[in-house]
Image (tube, rainbow, N blue to C red; front, side, top):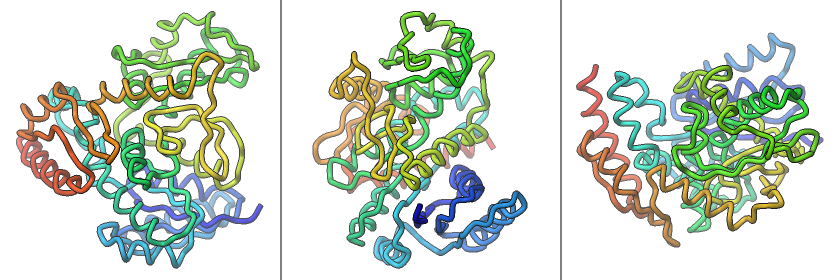
Length: 375
């Protein structure tokens, strides 16, 4: 297979894990890591490369300076490298930052869900997609930053990344393991098809329930639909007992594994069925057949694509996003925004794409002021 040119933008927790994983392969893809902190990029890229060499792999990896705040410079850097695939894990504030607050404080703020933090995740991805469009190149973009919502917003203005990672995918290994145990089958025999928004997949992993939000699950054993034989409560309870895993910053490892699966699936045109959020700018999460073009949604007999979209849009409301207008304007839910207002003194009921950066800066300052009280 012809080597692909893959660009990784952002080398934080997820990005660094992904770099480690994709360098440990005998495939000869060309990798370019891009970010702002040159000293860190130099040393962290070397750490990944030298560790891969230690394991018997010989990756082709380089790094370069890139600042997404400068759209023209970003477009130039992309044009020079000409990537087939860009993987972006950038954010103005990672979602896990609030998990470092004292537990009772974090739990109170976490009731606001992820939706109100949207400006932190949308702003830089919006700039990236503008830069990609400027190049005029046919580049597939994989987004790790709240793709369930960011991708469909950008889809409204023709700038959606190709697909997302994590979220719905993160609960799949646990669900497969739980179902295999419940049905007394080997893990290799069990496949599942899950349609679920970030809100649902996050709750399933950490609380063992969907919090009232809808989802659609199909369990297959050697291709046979055995969903009707599942005791769903038992299956979900196992996610918080036998198959309970670390979350927060440590838990980002499983997001990186999802990202690596998507990158490899597209770079190698595998055609495997996996799970991913926001294929082709759709809201929420889906089972997809991954290939060089992105992800093709795989539907069970008892669910249409329109039903799957509506299910995910309903899950989106539980996450604090009421609706997305045709121009990309977002309306936030009152319940979740009221929590942000009470705790942080921050309030945003409606946001256009062009307002995202300014609102993100306001939110960042409000959070810094709030967090200072607990240092």
